[in-house]
Length: 316
Image 1 (tube, rainbow, N blue to C red):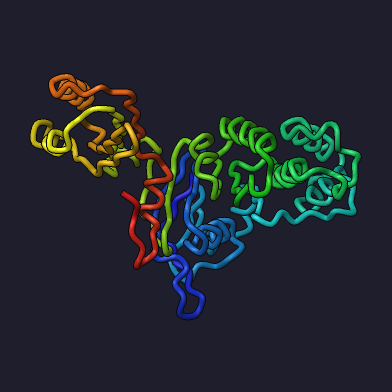
Image 2 (cartoon, helix red, strand yellow):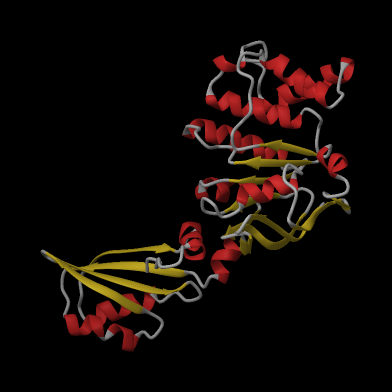
């Protein structure tokens, strides 16, 4: 439904977005990730027609945003990062205000109001003043305003920022439900939330797309590494160092002696699983193993590796 072609945005000498291209399909929930200043919000504002691209274009159903901005905006619901609420209005008044802007009035508004109140769970606050609602409900109100015209596309910029864990779960559930009916593109700094909500992840860094796929695909493509910690209470240091020669698929990162225990930190590619070989080696060397624990490289590791600024180095 949406096609981005060589999209760029310059602010003077600053190249905020640099010739990015990707497509979004119906029924997808897509997460748009990037560090502060990476170009996320600028890209979302160009997709919604709020900003004019320096070059390139956005196509929605083969209409481009430069020549058909109003027609495209009719198909998009947009919740910006700073939710623009009029706090002195009643919730139903605020939603009516948004509906009237889009020429939704009379019985059409009544039906639209019932729909968004039901879908966004606003039954208990529809007659309350917006300013007296909790942050979670305010996010729901902003989302309801973005949905009042029943758009095919939802663009959500940091929709869970500032919410407590219970509110985040509520908004996540709502977004996943909406994703069955609409194309949803959302940005977030909360990586665990993106991973739990979206079908696909696009990562932008310094104005360029650096990754695009499911979290599983991205981690696999990044040649994910598993880290394993082995705790033993007997063992010769030379035998530990010789493990690499016996089991070539592993790399011994370091050996940490603490009181009566020795901690051996090992890493290996996710494409292999040498734990049986490690266990057999430990038995041969008569080590007493008290713990073997491992952790795979996750989305946070991938994000850091792709978005580190120049001069920084990734953790091993």
